Length: 243
Ligand SMILES: *Cc1c(COP(=O)(O)O)cnc(C)c1O
Image 1: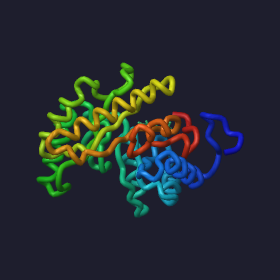
Image 2: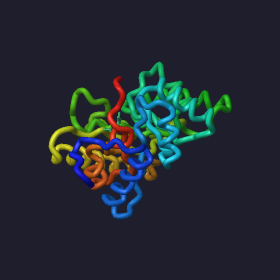
Image 3: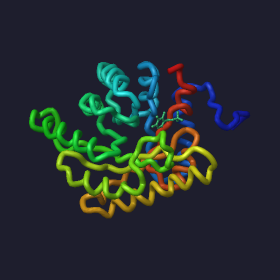
């Protein structure tokens, strides 16, 4: 792979980078299916179009304003990625998030799930949507106070209570994972997989099989620990523009 140092990211085209990431994924999985969500934050529309054309059909946004703008821009070009929200959503933005995203991947409290449930009930009643709204439950697997996500001790109870809401559907679990040594990172992913397996034993959650973990710098470890979808930004788009 040439002279590139760990943590550096090559200035190649988005399409080449997506191809390289997919090759790495295949290498790490030995054939198991692992999806790729493009972490789209701060990327201008033409770069998202380029990524989509190179097969990046799953897009994740952190900020609801960017989600709305980018998705409207893509739809205007008849491009319809599967879009999810991968950043924390403030309650006053939930409605816009649901309008523009196919899934919210960062639900970490019953209160948020309940707000989504009520909003979806209204959307279904008005014909704007049909069926329950899909979400991932976010686990704080690192213990870092700065991270969003449900505390591991409360996680199964969160899943149990949310699964009883009629207008939401838990599709799986998302985590950011620890920073630090490989052992720290790995143990946060192991914990996440264990809890994701545990909640699948709850009534109605046997098909909540999405396990979203792994980013540019830790996707190998995440895949080794059972990730079904990685979220990659920097390794595809390069270092982000100033924020
Ligand atoms: C930005 C972001 C990513 C991607 O991180 P990179 O290191 O740029 O690959 C993944 N997940 C979330 C929640 C993010 O905010």
